[in-house]
Image (cartoon, rainbow, N blue to C red; front, side):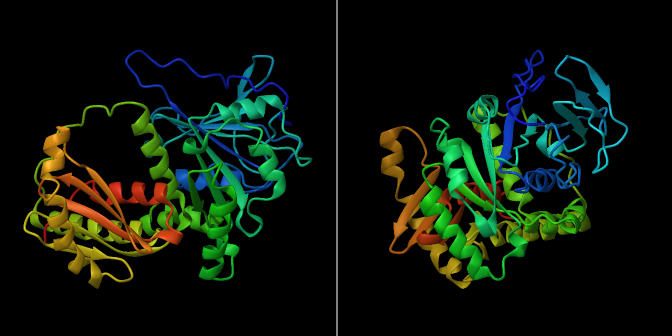
Length: 377
């Protein structure tokens, strides 16, 4: 299917009574840029076929469903709908304009992922531009080794200003030769595409990596899908208040608690490993202890008491403003220091190289690190 033809059932769906509207994440990019791989990385499962069949490929809409997961619905421009038996590289879409896929993926509950097919001739229709411009979050996919070509800039320049809700995702990062290539490409994309995107993210979502991500958090983090899922969740939180939290689980036994602590520590290390330009970071508790991480983690232990003293000294400012200082950003020479105080008894911080820092990704990662506080020893 070529954009410019009608896309059925892609108007905003009315919210159910008492429910929050779904966040629409539009995944777009030039022909064969890796859009399906990006969605599969977010889902942490190989749902969408990754082999492009331009003559018959529709737009895709993927959402979580507790019931009916696995259903593949083909919507035609005439208003008809049929169910496909399977979704893979051999699926006959029968000219359908939209393929709706229901999956079991609770981490994207309340979100709909829309993949727009792009013609190989690069001609983008008015409807495609309208869908991108109206997205709650736009993920523009570009091949890392060819990132941000003039043709891509021409397409994005036709959209209204939407930098704060747009991220450029560099696909096939596993094909780059070395880490220095990542740094060089990220620096160039931030410099040249900065007016269009609030963040740059890398994805290395080969088939085996995506399959492994289903049960392996490290593989998910390595694929780049985890940080994108975090960005989607953060965007959803900003759009509407959080739903009331569920009652706390009953206390675990000692062995289960130990496993939970180990898992928490591993999670922090995985999140930290995804940050370009990280020098060190720390998470402190009420007793002053500091869980340090990052390439120069020894510096975190030295920074922690100084940061605590600085934050405690903001009492006068808080009293004058009538509110607590929850987040602080300091420029320290070539570095940026980000600090979050998730609770009165603790804080979390990141020290990053300013020239390599992606603020949106760093802030999202820091909130995730701070979310559950310092694990008990």
